Image (cartoon, rainbow, N blue to C red; front, side):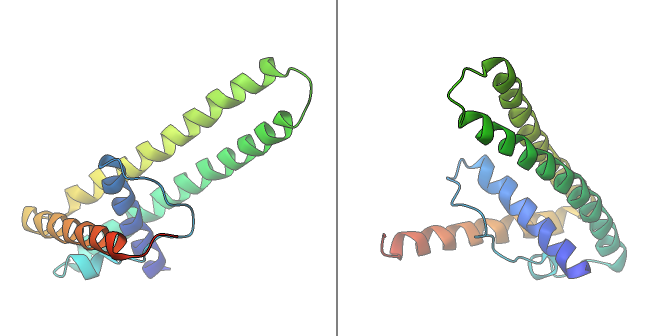
Length: 148
């Protein structure tokens, strides 16, 4: 469970960093398993516990938003299949979809900020450098890979 939460945290952080760089979304299920212990080598037990608690809370909040988002998107899809004009029902659903997606992004950022506060300045710098290196390696691998 702890490993899952730390992996989720690292993925959330990576997602936030990548989103800030305006990367294109490549689809669900293509997340890289990153453990924060692999990135920041000298975390204390207290830091690990704090990060674990932050991640658990964030995961719960994000899962709730995603369930709501799934329900809203299902409703949108079913209404889109109708031949009649359902604008009065559909437009509020689009607003709700946007709101939920925004809340998910905000929660990722809140999680990042909370974790950053747990890290020392040296650990934070190490995290930034290693994440930048991972992004650079990923770019190089993407360029080298044959296009489909």
